[in-house]
Length: 82
Image 1: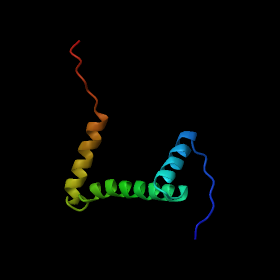
Image 2: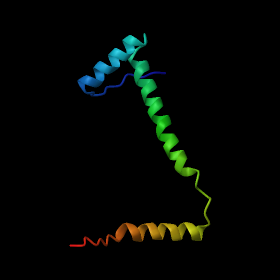
Image 3: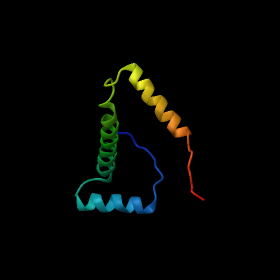
Image 4: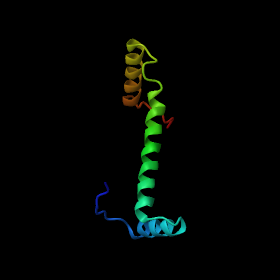
């Protein structure tokens, strides 16, 4: 069951939604629903791309890798040759 909601959107976004709805002979609601569904699918695909590596390392290897990443992240020794 659909529910009425209120959003504050920029005028250009509202115009784009209206143009798409007109061009595609559909409702503005349909445009927004499809856009949200596509955004959710794209976000899920990015998450799944990372999850393919889950469980592929032993706990010790994973801990070593995380420690190396953490130490490299915190170590910013840069020789500027000045």
